Length: 290
Image (spheres, rainbow, N blue to C red):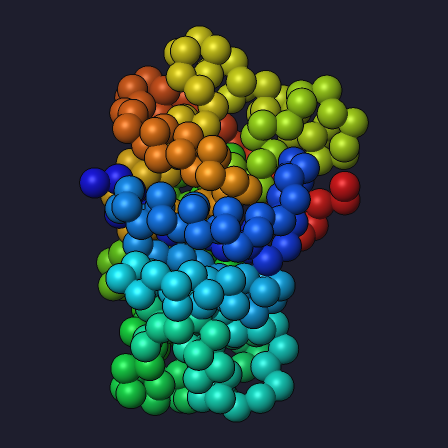
């Protein structure tokens, strides 16, 4: 079932997020409805972080009120680790109301690189079954190579989408699988940029206008929605174990679930694989000047 490959991101539960997000932060009842729909549809894993406002507490409230619906949870260490990691993990377990974290991620490569002394503590917590896997969230292929060669790292989380595609990442992620890594990808909609008005005057839209036009034309020619193309292109890659998506409301979640039931033609996939963004900074939202 394709929904089993979906990880539901929760940054929107704690704060507004995404370049096209005009929705307000959902309240607890709205979050509860989304989580029930997700779980009952086969989505059993959440991605959250201390940096996402009160998202962890919101998830914990849901778990307390729904003890028969407990998600696997991926959590992230803060960018600056200023306390004992075992204390931090115990705090997360208490807030989330879970007995174990599915994955504890370093939130960035820089945090991982600067905090290698924390790896020993994470391995100890893994041995105590407080966390199942250790992972690192990365942006670039160069960062990914360093992580792939670390035997203590089980999970790599990296962007992958219609622009950050097979052309950019395929060989790297195949190598990650050969090394026994679990591959999670994020930014499936490039933070919503794929759905931007093509005449938007934001600089990032102007710089990627040609490629944005290409995917719009592919959608029109094949009569397949851009959302269906973006989701299923990622899901069909055999070197990707799970993909992370975020939603602002329950109708978006329902639409995403419905859009999973689609197969892309070989010709369409081939056309997507021809898209090549030379300036990789344009694929990194943290470097966008918008």
